[in-house]
Amino acid sequence: MNADHTPLGRIGPPSLPKKKNESHLKLQPDTKEDKLGSFFSGLNWTDRQILAMHFAEKLSPWEIHVVLNLSMSDVLCRIQRLKRIARKSMGLARASGKSHFTLRIS
Image: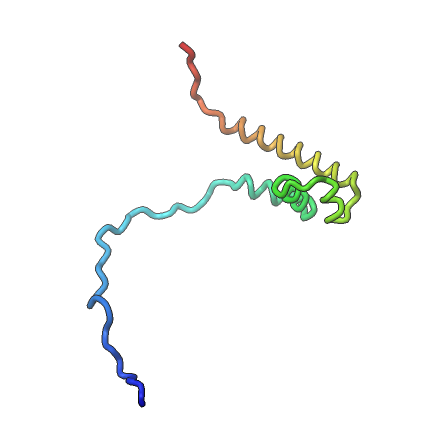
């Protein structure tokens, strides 16, 4: 028995509908400074790993010490330094983003 290989013809509507509601909005280029990207680019590989393990994965300094094969004091010093950098950058972000609104209690 031979299979029929003849084309079935066009399936679907004869033509696709034209877009009537085309948006005239276009994406603007991102010219703002990426503060988070610049924060992470200032860190070396080990600092990024410790940041991810301790703050995102919630690993203890002991676990990081074992996984990365670093001295315990090095891990603790790096965590303290990363906390200090994060506090400083968050403080600067808050200072630069202050709103001019005031709260009135009546």
